[in-house]
Length: 471
Ligand SMILES: Cc1cc2nc3c(=O)[nH]c(=O)nc-3n(C[C@H](O)[C@H](O)[C@H](O)COP(=O)(O)OP(=O)(O)OC[C@H]3O[C@@H](n4cnc5c(N)ncnc54)[C@H](O)[C@@H]3O)c2cc1C
Image (cartoon, rainbow, N blue to C red; front, side):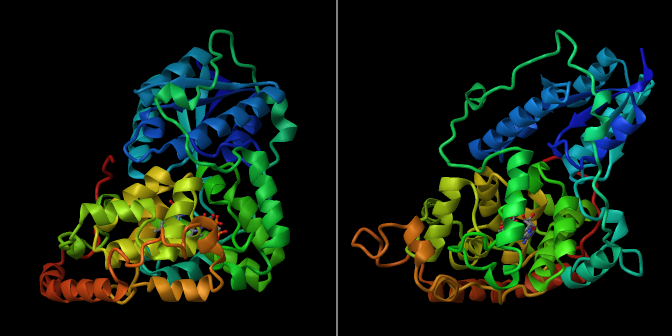
């Protein structure tokens, strides 16, 4: 039976109780609120899922389940291949008139939610989708002409003028509306081995309590110096380490924005810019979903990458012979996280110096990162490869030696991750010398300029708003 006062909160990301818009709205408007998470192949067996991200998710679900149980409810966990069907079935079983979930901005979840809404509606129920993942939703940052921004700086100006200081959504006072998990629906949180995965990395502590601690630590130790220190990978607290929590929603973006605005100093405002980059790439992916399948500018689709398998393997393993690049890759392989400066340097070395297709690097990052997030990862790779939103297309080629001299002058970061560096065990000759790789890349870039111009002249290089595709 459908009930006007019974609701189901469907967690997908947003895996926290604090400042959670969906939970808050559901608890305000209903007297009996259940919470669920539906695991599926998208989370656990997708082509870009690695053990680190899957482990972080399962650990986070365990924390969420504990917190919900302590609040008098629990997490109803399902495993399904037909997510829309499972969601509709669960709403029916629980008698929930409304299903609350955060609004997703990627093609696959958008298509999925469309299906869910149809199934629920056919059964007299509603899907309530609420903006909760971003500081500013995609519709709210548009040019004067009403079109999406494709360049970051003007985007950021408009984004800042739209940004609001939103008060905390106090959910705890409404917990008495949470309902216990009905008998027969309780299920333990699975472990990684259930999915045939083994964790080999040391990853961040999961859950919203760890996220709050991370934010507070950064706010007191790192935020003020962020504008000066953010590129120094060896320095503790040089960046927040919140990306994994923003990815899974174990912290709310509003908590981060409030922290930056309340501080207001130069470091905090610089940090706010980084949060704007995150929104920017989400907006780009929302308006131009073809970016998830290839270059944003289609004129780059046929770029003749060289793609030498051995080069790609040595890059993945952190054995290129450039210690700064190798340190970055080894940090990634060991921890599921890599400092932003290193993400740029390693990505540049792969697609410029080694001339390997950036999409292979994008895929590898997704497999390894705990914070692996399609919009930011794709945006970062397209920025480095020069086929996305960045106006500096060919000239952005990071020099791995100069980058190390500038950002790791005493080799502290290199020594931490490449202990054999400086010994006879470390390669004396890089897999491809930077000068040679750069020359080769620029030559190919120059030789293919005419073909790109032709595509652009036909108009097909201009990003179009595509139909959402599944990936
Ligand atoms: C090739 C490449 C791939 C990347 N892949 C991802 C990814 O899969 N997931 C991811 O969250 N970030 C990605 N980034 C962006 C950035 O490197 C990380 O967000 C950052 O290193 C996370 O560390 P932090 O939380 O300490 O960041 P901080 O410096 O403390 O920044 C705060 C938050 O702002 C956001 N942010 C910062 N820089 C960027 C950026 N350039 N683009 C988008 N958001 C940003 C993140 O949510 C981050 O947690 C990628 C960057 C590049 C160049």
